[in-house]
Image (cartoon, rainbow, N blue to C red):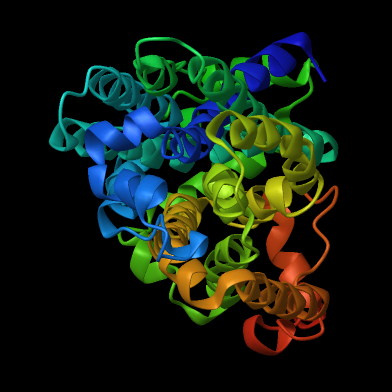
Amino acid sequence: MTLFVILSCMMAAIGGVIFGYDIGISGGVTSMELFLKKFFPEVNTKMKSDTKISNYCKFDSELLTSFTSSLYIAGLVASLFASLVTRAYGRKPSILAGGAAFLAGSALNGAAMNLYMLILGRLLIGVGIGFGNQAFPLYLSEMAPPKYRGAINNGFQFSISIGLLSANLINYGSEKIKGGWGWRISLAMAAVPASMLTPNSLIQRSTDHQTAKKMLQRIRGVDDVQAELDDLIKANNISKNIKHPFKKILERKYRPQLVMAIAIPFFQQVTGINVISIYSAVLFRTIGFGESTSLLFVVLTTGVVAGFGWSWGPLGWLVRSETFPLEIRSAGQSINVVVNFLFTFIVAQTFLAMLCHFKAGIFFFFGGWVAVMTVFVYLFLPETKNVPIEKMEIVWQEHWFWRRIVGDSSKDTKMEAP
């Protein structure tokens, strides 16, 4: 592990702060009375004066949930275009494009004078996150040596947790600012990640293998990188013959990757983790806490949410990004991000209405999905620890279930034997 890799991955993982910050910041500001009074007066009226409505239903508003969920639908659409940019121009342009969109959206949100500016800002932030989430996991997986890949990818989820904590602390502090403009600080504060080129990306977009070799030597910290470089070049030559990666990923031999690309982000969202991250302040308001107290409790519960960062948080991104061969990697990651955003949007858009109807029973709904998720992972997800990305197909071929679909590696070995 070289200092170059450590610093590069630290910079890239900071991109997770962007995602975490915007997950956490929206829930906090939607519990601030002055913010609600300016943009969602009907919700503010129900919350303060309508005693006939249950506390569980006072935040049930399509406009309010649209403010939160618009980010995710924009991210969904942007990730489709980000896949093309990432494949054609590399990870860095996707990250930079995402950063520019994020800055523009943050500026609009901070200066918002009406609901239209507010929603437009959220849409731009969603575009930024769509590009960033397409590129960051790929970047980290490609930069990391196989034995450190898990730890390095954990940095992405750790950064998301840092972003959540930062958002909650800023919300708690900005709520106390006199004059009613503290929410502007919450929405406007942001950071843009920086990144560097990766060997896979460099090889995929160039025929200058010497430049790629020098980059790989710098990353690995050793001169003897020819074997790994040959694997990357071989995988790249295969990928160049793939003109339609989205069509290619539908082939039978890529069925395990396609299933995981859909199932893992789906389960990641139906655990309810983003409900806690997005709506925790609102949940505390529904049980009678005041504005400041709710925001304080959100800060205190961040530690519980951070526990997600040791399991499904980072592994949900890691397993997906490291199981795709190069020829379908951008397409696979795009499907990952689309499914993730789609179900985040669905959960964010419907949760307040579900809370109104199901009340506390809503959490039994999420608990049931956690049970289903556990069984699925136990049966169908193989171990990927210390397996180079370029060798992942062997793992699928040796799995008790997937080998029936993709074929048995032992048969291939016999066929190749002289």
